[in-house]
Image 1 (cartoon, rainbow, N blue to C red):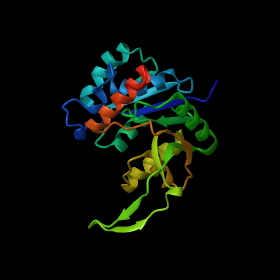
Image 2 (image 1 turned 120 degrees about the horizontal axis):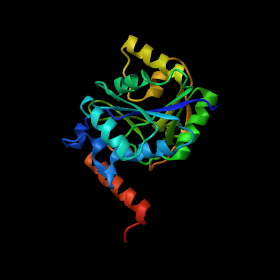
Image 3 (image 1 turned 30 degrees about the horizontal axis):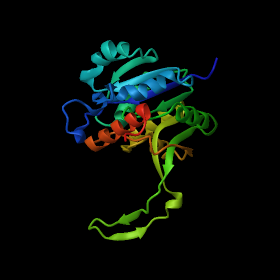
Length: 236
């Protein structure tokens, strides 16, 4: 049997920057809720054997009894409540990952344009390196700026990449990284940073600038345009 691969999908945020009463992950993108786009890619991937959804506590019942059956998401084995931060939500998701799972894939629910190729490539790299993230090289010139708004230095963009998700890890490695971070009070916005704190190398897999994260109304408008272009071609 192939090594068990489980995806944890943090969708526990309230989306305050979206300025909407409905959490951003449940807003419509096209004709379905935003998070369903990513879930469908994971559902259709032969690499992924099971999915854990992490959502706000008040939305657990809705997801279990309505969203999952409505969209025939048969690989979702658990729906659990999120925590105060994304990091806490991933930790909550890890608690129900099968003990036999060899690889855990973390993917933000609000990155709807993830592809099956990204999932496959990041899992393959994690199998050989233990930890891998999808990322894209920075194209723009990057400045380090002081707190009072003065340029301090120009960074060498040749070595700078923007991290995305999916990110994939050996299960034990990721659990150890989260456990240690909780003991030390280390906060992070992605799981790769926690693994880096263990001194473990994290490998890069080429992502795509299309793999956008929807966090504000402008992003949602961009997402609608991208979705329309994919479904119908560019508008005239």
